[in-house]
Length: 113
Length: 110
Image 1 (cartoon, rainbow over the protein chains, first blue to last red):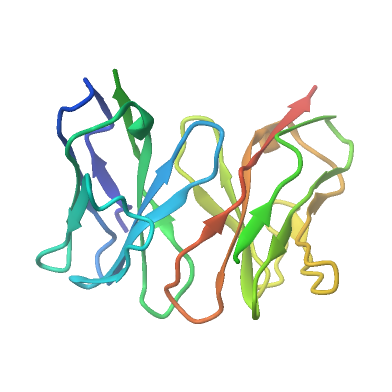
Image 2: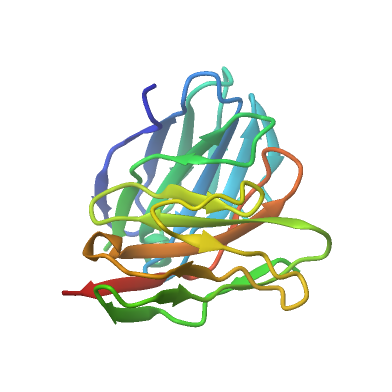
């Protein structure tokens, strides 16, 4: 089966600009996660979707970050405006709703200058 | 609070030597524990989970609830084991977020 797809793989922007990341989960996986991984740290959950509904966005900086999964399949994560501290790898993962095994995409490496 | 601690950022052992990557956790309730691995230029992938009680690529991990630990062990390290290893936990019910440790970079020297 095809894995989790993410694009772009790399993005360089200046602070205060906006950026968007896209994720397409494994077919049939109703649960989708966005994680932020800062250099030297483990991934940290930003937001979790079940179909098109938000399950957990408690660690999403809502003043600048937004995410949507309108049709319950692919998802977009947006940052507007970006700050220097947003430089990180943004990982998308998906899972079957009855399973704790998550499958990760390759990630998008964001550099904010 | 949910927390995973991996005390070693870097670990270097020689090929054929035993390896142990440490993981301690705190969680109110009964968590599910995982080890994820990221090889060079590859995506993060599941190595093993405590409920399956499997040995994957020669690695094993036993959940010790008394010591709240889930250490990863392999009796004879191989060069292809060099990678970044992350310990993680989640709630036991399906489709819950993962809480990760900071990771341990394992290097196997020839």
